[in-house]
Image (tube, rainbow, N blue to C red):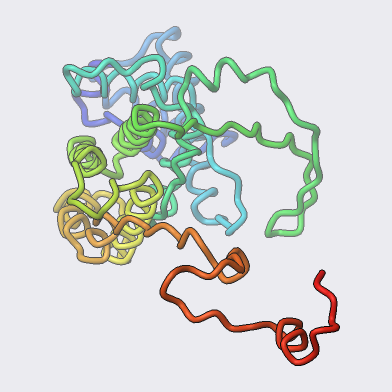
Length: 317
């Protein structure tokens, strides 16, 4: 492997297209020639068998990914990452983000990472609801809850029988749980190369600082619903500023480049302003008023009183 990497073959795609050989071809001399050139010598029988298997796996993965991009439809299912790729991404992230223990309730679930990877594959950004930002711990504990199967029809007209997706929702009942949801989303976006975790974490800190800030007299504290609305508006502005795509370019991540501009947009900031305290309703209304006259007010006689004044024979009730 070290000799292959030294020769420039350091990715799966490069190895899949290192020669003109395609699996199931009768003549594999192009593959053996390319292998000998990369190694600088003729491979042994054991080495050739291992490299041949590796080549078939690399070609199958690359071809399936190209096919998925070429035949993508609107209702296509979310592509699930391979388990070795998940483990490698998490390991590299843990080494890079020193001081953060990505485990337990802080580790993003597989389905959350798949959603973020789907954003990158589609090359467009949309908001991920906070109740969908579940943890790996929650996903593992609820893995046995399977739903009934159902029939679906995809964009090509094919009928398929699939298992219904488990209905897992994150708890957002207090500030701490909200922070964990936001952190898990930031870690998942960072793993999928959509947004740098440091920038996303700065947004989370800003939201919680505003949430805990004491409001002026006559105003109430910023509510959790205001924070959720501001978070949605932020992603709306990010989507508007990254219409050309969110996949990484020579300049960097497109979302990173416009993140500060979206955070400081007036449409986002005005949603985080304290709201005036609602005034209490009047303690009395016309239906609750008593018939007793208060001192200093003019008493208006009723129709019965006027009749008694005119005719003394009218009895009193």
